[in-house]
Length: 46
Image (tube, rainbow, N blue to C red; front, side, top):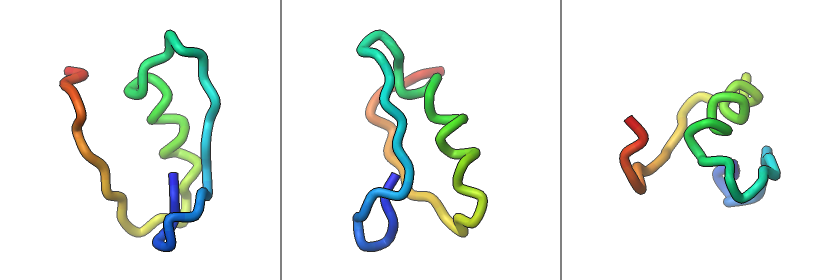
């Protein structure tokens, strides 16, 4: 995740077999002071 200046504020290194939708909840939970989030949907994860 990056801030408004596109500088990294959080990241997680996972194995190549780990998909984004399984790692995202833990990463999002670390952003306790975020007021907004912008994301895109690159593919359908149900």
